[in-house]
Amino acid sequence: MKPPLLAQSLLMAVAGPNEAEYIAGDLEEEFAMIREARGSAAARRWYAWQVARSVCALLQLRVRTGELTQVMLIASLGVGAPLLLLDRLWQFVYSQIPLKDGLHRAPEFLAFNAFCVCACAAILGAWAGSKWPGSKRSGSKWSASKGLGSKSRAVALAFAAMIAVLAALWAGSANTPGAYVVCLSLAVPASALLTFAWRKSR
Amino acid sequence: MSKGDTLGEFEHLTLLAVFRLGDDAYGMRVRREIAERTKRDVTIGAVYTTLDRLAAKGLLKSTLSDPTPERGGRAKRSFRVTGLGIASLNRARQELGSMLEGIAFPLSGGAR
Image (cartoon, rainbow over all chains, first blue to last red; front, side):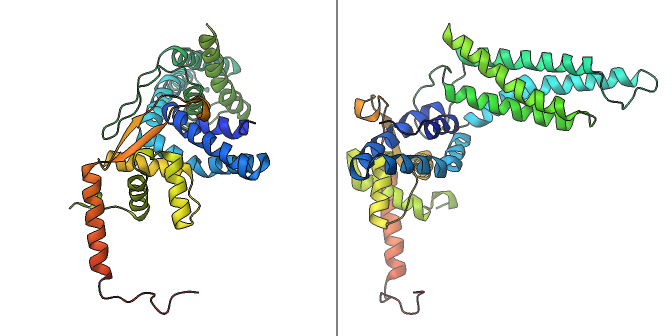
């Protein structure tokens, strides 16, 4: 009998890969003890409840280790910044055409943006699947980084990429169609995760 | 003593739990120790955040052990109290003792 998969996945996604390893081990050990004492259903409920109540604390821990900041920075530079630069480029192009300034971007421009940003996210995902700088902090001793490869980091990177896209869209042109926003915020994390999975399978 | 050196209530409990557990102090045992002794429902996330903070203050040291089958093949991170941690506990005990001196317990007028 295994702990609930959804709660396990949430734990892996929220906790850093190094922390997730021993926190999941602790929870699994206590899960087995509770299952023996109170049964499987109670143990599964306990596990899910522990993870759900630990989300904020684990995110806080991840920020403290510097990893979340690192992931956000990588996503902002790798995905958010290119999207914002493209937007500024099209804004300049439009401003040079009489009566076009301030109008909605033509679908071709948006498609080009989407293609470029998805490509950036895909490169990030592939890079994450093969290599990742280790997180360092002073004061406490952490296990060595396992050279990315961890699903937890990939999920965190995909999520951070989605936030970076939304932030860049918000900071960019005001005339952005809703469908474009939805498409980009789904396609970008999907690209990162797909290339991560592809890189890991090699 | 600077403000960052003082221990919060939960930090104090966590440090004491690690001290009580000795060589067997790791997240799950610390959580259970605090929960059983204080009757509080403590989460593993809160325990690890506090353990990490204490380690950053130099009051705890941690080591990572090899994965074991009973933990689903996962490693264990064990903690032990450092000399600075023991000094901090002694100081906290002294301060508390000094503040409690002359007060008769249980105090009257508490909420029921």
